[in-house]
Image (cartoon, rainbow, N blue to C red; front, side):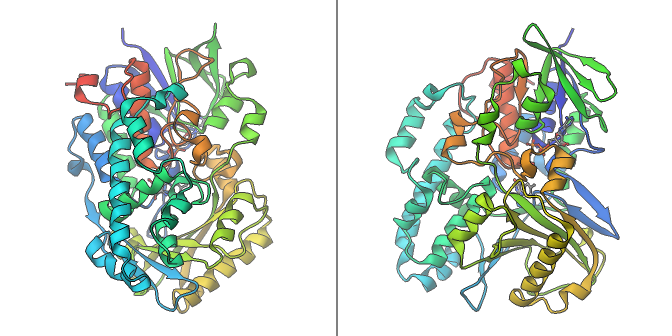
Length: 505
Ligand SMILES: Cc1cc2nc3c(=O)[nH]c(=O)nc-3n(C[C@H](O)[C@H](O)[C@H](O)COP(=O)(O)OP(=O)(O)OC[C@H]3O[C@@H](n4cnc5c(N)ncnc54)[C@H](O)[C@@H]3O)c2cc1C
């Protein structure tokens, strides 16, 4: 008889694990507390607008493609990808005019050379190194089921460590190649995707610049939700059962082995394997009894938690030509703004922020002639804010966007508005301290130093998703599920999972 698996949570990690194990013939049940799939990649519809609630940047298309190949699906049968041009637009506080980046180095070189004549020869070297880091990491590092620090010491990883700047500071590494502060900001901003600061991250993450400048930025027509919908549908086709509105209250452990889960209504679902896609902290602290937790209170207190967000979902009754699909504003208080999103007890005074206008690419996500905006201001996690403070901040951001991005009459154009903050992240997803992204990806919380995909205390209990290996972002969660698959099947190599490993077909 096939083994029974319960997966807690239908986020990117839960859905992709469900597919891999469903394909292998396990009897898989996904138990999700909310009423639909997607987790942080959920979607909602209001007044004719469609809002992707979380991810909006489709990056690393190769990782998605590999996952779909692995499960025997043609990604293009499920997702209609469009490459964005420009990739994004940036307004700088200290500059009069915004710039547009295209992920086409020949075109982007004009921007770089304008700020720092002659910089391209250095930048090319920097990006060559970034591409090597990406390729070596992809084939030896990010798919690795890290057990211990010793796992760093295989040939390819040692090569990566010795040939390139890997653990030195990311911002210092950039400074070795690029002088102009505007250019440094352009290279540093992608670290926000990893929930960390360029001042705290290791130089290995210059690979993010390869992703950004050379691989391109894509959008799945119909919204990011189409990616989650595809995973959900494929999981169902492979026999996975979904129970929505089913918050798990406890992982049932007997003789230090996971034997089932208990839901709020005291119902027990027996199984052979439990995989938790819920946030690691929530799983450890709320779903496991004390003897079965791997980490102490002190451990969680001493972690760096990725930022939360002050998010506005706005439906507008008009469109603004000034905006492109992805829009960024960068403050001139750059370093202080990073400190503010990690250490501050209040909302950042001089924030950098992001405005996504998917209706620029996709007419389906807003009524005709209207615009759909997602405004994200990264903030510290764990903030407790009263309504008045939130209202004032909302007004400040709308006024700032109106002035800086020249969105005349923005406030009057809003016909739908929803605010989403750390409190909502906690309530909706059981996020620790209301973090949007999970554990930050600094050196102390990367690879062998990140909480592992397999419990050390409870047999047959696994963890998948952004809080474990390899880390934050939808593509990383697709990799995380492959690491869990490797763990369950005793596969130790660090390469992407292959047909030889799975023998699905
Ligand atoms: C605002 C925002 C913007 C982002 N932008 C991007 C982007 O542009 N590109 C990108 O690649 N990534 C982006 N990310 C990150 C990306 O969305 C996440 O890293 C990824 O979706 C996390 O997936 P996960 O598998 O870890 O699970 P999650 O999405 O966290 O899902 C976990 C699931 O577990 C459920 N759950 C929790 N507790 C229980 C319980 N007790 N019982 C049952 N179910 C439970 C939750 O309801 C949730 O559905 C963004 C995230 C946010 C929030």
